[in-house]
Length: 387
Image 1: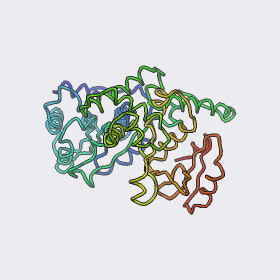
Image 2 (image 1 turned 45 degrees about the vertical axis):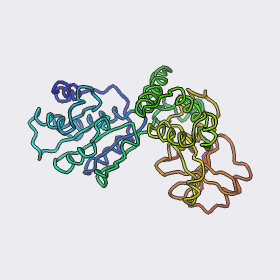
Image 3 (image 1 turned 180 degrees about the vertical axis):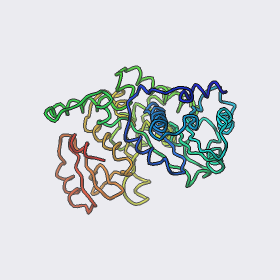
């Protein structure tokens, strides 16, 4: 096992150089967790940059926090050669390789942690019995749910999203001067079409994005859930992408695909677990939330464009706004059968109109509702002003 661990941790033997673009906002989030005891989980779409982010943070710990390289351990737990070992076996091998005592603090980074069935209990034991700071990642939202509550009160989850527009410009090394703000719209609409999967932004290789989606659908959904009809799942995915920014009727989807409503619900949960889609409930009473259809957004607008073509800019823009405000737990708002795009957990009411205005009925509902704040997002400047 030792040779594998050294391959994963080149900083044990030499200075490392990272050929990647830094995502400063996420590094700041990780820095804020450094002094806490909590286990930090990174989750998000496949290839959204979780592994690169962990390695950037390791580089920062060594170069800026002066932590001994041999006290930092990274491993990807999906490596086939590590299949028969527990997390404890692997950590013990690391400690043995560098003669590290249990009271000496170490920083443990576990990529694809959910490949180990009992990872919650193993991480709890490490947390309780050793001097460790643990960071871990997974592309599956549901697998990170601690059903037996081993880590309750001991964990924090950070969701990593595709690149924001600001990061998109940074990755493409585009700088828009104040004298050239007229260029903003064309670059932004390019971003709306391309999305924010880092490697795709850098290369523009269509096959890369297609392979990513195929991997998620075949590995994380079809194979993982042992689904026999792969063509049905692909048709289901295409229907979801067509409905981005809209309410999704379970009955309609069931009728189109000739499957039961329960099957539709189950398939929706599978796609939501992979972060390919996000579902948004209606704001209101418990009964209204349960009975009303969900609105659907995609995890990356570039994936949606790949499936449907780049059209309906209003829906794409609304999707980008949703991704930027997701941490504020947005729900859609309906009053007198008129829909307003979002109401946030701080009671702010938000309507998204890309280069357009609300109609008179929407404006009446928007103006009359007693909200903590009212926000209209109608263009790029409004989008960039969102925190």
